[in-house]
Image (cartoon, rainbow, N blue to C red):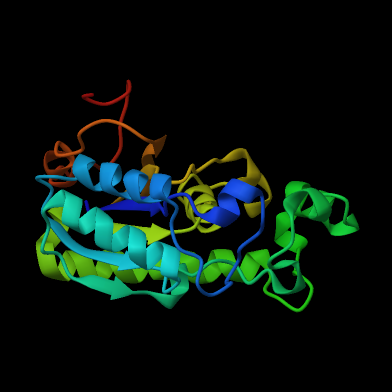
Length: 227
């Protein structure tokens, strides 16, 4: 039962100022963002990570490096284009308060599966390639560490929300009900009956126990499981 830790990158100047960074180059972490990345890494100390996959954007690469160092891990870093931020097209770099007045905004919030950003990517496409990237990561982790493998994927808020929606069997139109804070860790396990959510948007707590959880195989639960 391999487990993936979905890590949202730490805070950036764009997050702080309410700008949609998208794929803008050169967006790094703030001092607080670097602290968040290190704190996330400290939570992973003792976990035998098979690898750390990351979106190729600067803020996720920086988060991944800080996280791995703080975890004391030698796990290889792997850039994964499937985990890159959604291409928001002409929305990129604009203030969220300005975008909130655009006619498309309501559809983004309530029917994202039908949204294609002007000169950019569709939300459906973003979801599909992110889910495929997680499947590739599970396969790579299992090949390296067996069914008890644990690995990390450092990526972006909307990407994490789409992956979680899929794990829960939710339609993409429900993904705005999911939240992922900067520096948070969301945990998804893949069992024989599909993926399921272990924990969402966590920002504190030692996660070394996941090495044991990952080694457990389950075919289903009645009465809430063993706990």
